[in-house]
Image 1 (cartoon, rainbow, N blue to C red):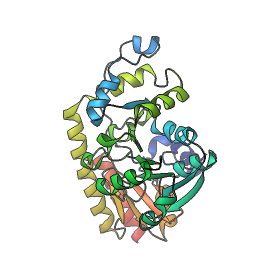
Image 2 (cartoon, rainbow, N blue to C red):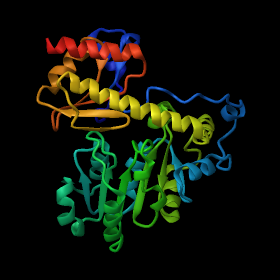
Image 3 (cartoon, rainbow, N blue to C red):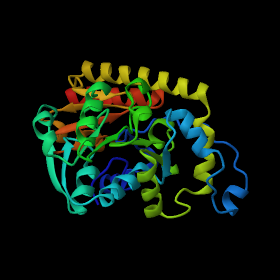
Length: 326
């Protein structure tokens, strides 16, 4: 298993700090979960059905006709490499490590690329995988450039796989409406809606590929309660607008806070900020000993800071950064 943010129980054991006393900023999950609907007991007692309105709500939210609910976008990340013959796969790096791991495990030849290398490498690739906005750097590539890459890959039967897990606050940059032949878009539900435990995501692609993926995942892949929660939240347009506004404002505040203490972010998006720094490990340890968990990366040495949710959390982070300076 690769390392991820959110391993709070492990941190509690390592540092001897009770789980309830931690400030967990190690994930890119919105710290304000959407209000949950009252669930019908039948959501728990009956097998899930696919004509309950979830797909319709998702089509309206994402602006595309062809999509498939999956048990978290992680399920799609692990399944997609098995849906085509072994080939040459480019991954725009650094990014969410599960992408490269999944393609390697399925027997594909992996090529790690930076943005400047894509143009030269594209004609020799069968698949190009990227995260937009990127995790952890926050790099955001324009739709026009990505659609050009998709067209060039599709001519040869190739795929462009775009993981848009963090794009809900900037939907104008999404390729959701263009998903189809040669373009597979992954969307996460839990991050923006603050409900990661629902384990719900969506794959946007052409109908044939979605049918193959659905067969691989098997029936009843999404639980009844998760379907009900997803259906409800995807319809709450007013709450979605407020969530975007809250996240954008908090992200700006976080950037200013880090900048004020010598940790000016090098990137980020509405749900996190990222700083590359040789002192990353030192600050990570300093904060952890004070019950504040942030995400540490080794390549490059860097930290990703999630959004504090309450005013007391903001004050706690600021005080810790001030103590590190002294």
